[in-house]
Image (cartoon, rainbow, N blue to C red):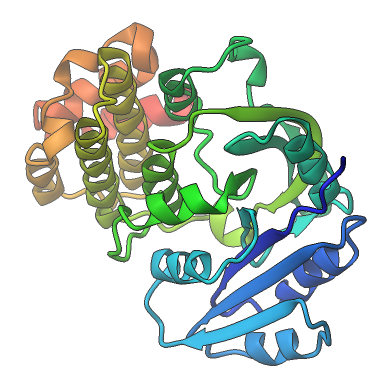
Length: 330
């Protein structure tokens, strides 16, 4: 018998007046109607709240709080979810009209702990299908297989995963509460994965992720490097706590951390904002400090291998050469 499962949707919102209406409209137009929408206004200073109030639907709940950052807004929204499954989305994106119906169908089929689905990214009016590498998953998913897949393929977005609310609430209680400038999804998804044992993979394109102008010309900072290393260190501790830290998982955490740190460091170099003091601070970071053995061509590619040697050995005078390498081999 088909069950009309209640699906909660949580939106952390901060100064999103330009796009929040499109996201809410995409939810109201869903072909599946048994949902609740929880919007956490994280101290917006624009008209975001007023835009939300224009939608007269009893399934929509709007909560205002002082600005505490996206992580706390998400966790507060999750705490108020009543649905059997919860989807946490971004205020500036939107859903395909059959998104919730497909999730409900998957839930009725085999009650997985989590439902994965594909998505589009779009920028300047153009949509592109994003490859989630689901084909890399074996037919039988063990917990460590799922964790390794998420880390290895950087598929740690929250918004393309519908998760059992009970598990999402348990995991979110173990997530960091501090404001972080990058990888907030990673910091929340991984604690949740400590409780997820089964998944359902959908090949359907159900979500539209907006690549904003601010993401294209992003202002990178050294704080993002320290945040990345801090989050990775926290994830290692979580995996240990839950008895899940296999060698493969640890290797993938360290390699992913290297990739993310090198990505930001390379941007700082090309923008001429990588200082000598940053070089010194880089060597003090916990996970980065322990990851030298993973700086191998087969893990990070020859370009990043060369750059990693410059960064790790404090060869500040070679930054002009590093900049040329980044420019010529991007």
